[in-house]
Each structure stands twice: as C-alpha cells, then as structure tokens.
Length: 336
Image (cartoon, rainbow, N blue to C red; front, side, top):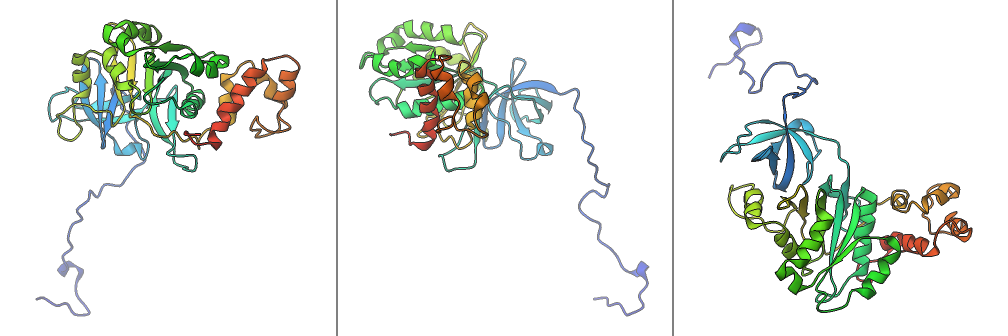
C-alpha cells in the first residue's frame, strides 16, 4: 500500500471521478411546446393510464412536477413514447388548470385533503332506497363537496322496487337537485339506463356512493363491455388485468360525447377542507344576503345577516334551512 509523506505532489494523488454529471445545474426547464394533450383515465401506484387522441398510453409523472399529482379527469401534457404499445412509457410534464375538483378528507379531523376527481361537470350521488338503508348525512356531505368543488349534483336513487322514494326526495326538494329513480327491473330492461343517460350526455359525471347501492352496476350498464376493456384493462404494474373499483376510472359513454367516472365505494366523506363561503355560491338566492355577515361567518350564528335577509322576504326560509343543514354536516358523523 502506497503511503504519502507530508510533502506529496498533487500530481501523485489520484482522484476518483464523481458518478454524477459534472455539468452545472440550471433552474430553466424545457417548455415542452410540442407535448401531446391527454386525459388521465386512471391512476395506480405511480402509473397513469391516459387517453391520447384514440390511443391508451401508459405514463409516469415527470420529476419536475414535484409533489403535484395528477388525478383522474386531469388534462395533461405528455412527451416520450405515445404509441400505446406494450412496455412503452410516456412522461407527464404538465398538468393543465382544473375547472373543478372533487375533494374529501378521511374524516373531519384529518387536515390532509385528497383530490378524487378533476374537471368533472357533475357529481352523481347514488343511493339505494333500501338494502342498504339510505344515509342522508352521507348524501349531504357529498352535496357539500360538490358545491365546494364546482360540480353540479345529481341524485340517483336505486332499488325503488324495495321502498318508495318520496320520503327521501322530500329532504332535498328545496335544493332543486335533479334526480333519477330506478328499480332493479328497469336496470335489467334498460329503461332506467335511458333516463340516466339523459342527465349525462355531453358531460363528465363522477359517480359516488357507498358499497351495495348499485353504483358500479349502473356504470356497467352505461358503458359497454368493450369500452370498459379498452380503457380499464391495463394494470399499472403488470400491464394486464381488469379494473376493479379500488381506484377511480374514467369511461366514455356509448354513442355520446359524455364520460362517467366510477369511484371506489366510500364509507365516509370528511369535509375538513370545506370553506362555508364557497358552499354559499350554490345558493344564488341567498348569496346576496351575506353581504352584511361578519367576517368568517359560518352562516349559522346569531349575527348572521341571512336571518334578516330571509325575514324581509328575499328568499324562502326552507332554502336557508337547507343551507344550514348541509353546513352542519361537518359537525356530525354520517350515521347520525
């Protein structure tokens, strides 16, 4: 072993070259002006299935995006191999500005919000009238999330052959929410599918509901088998397999220009992220009355200006009751 004394010549000392590139770093990023446009169909363990023109392309997120994550419904810019062939991988370099977001937290004490779907026009809340019993508080929470995120709500009530819909619809009559009532026999005959389709054509609709309400059965009836295979069969890791509702999946409607997004069944819908000042936008008849509200008003306190606004005849008292009932869901659990 060679040893060096105190007066060694620098030329005698050999240095090991670094493994990394020695070029200086720069903050200037490429603009990717030639990137292709795509739609995120599903996300699974870091791999994103995207629709680029008429091709299904597997992609990963570029490191330059940092912690920003793409979700189902996002419009993205991609570079790289976009042939859609097996074992190819493109790269998402940009996530376009979102027009709407459906968000939730695990519970009302959880500060971490999760974006479930982006750029949807409509939120279809699917609820069974029996077996399982309706959960109005969960419906309320979904409605609040829709109003907060800029989505229009739609109620889809299933299994009307087991229980009548009137009692549940009465709870939401003052909200003027469109609804569709279906039965199991109508789903089998296709009559219910036609009525639901009328509410979906030309729109991107996210479907939510807890397990057992018939949400995925309805989605399967709306989207033919061959379309589900073409968009949902790719597994992010193996490149094989079929989609099961463990992650959101966007599917094109048959014979139309609409999309449905099937989401996993929910047990809870936390609203920690919701700001009451955004929910009020869904009540245009009440919103002008908030001008006299104190700062950060919850719209359910003694000095809320909405009480005087309604008392003066500017809006129906039932509408104010509905608003406050929805906002109060943050303080209650879904089973209440």
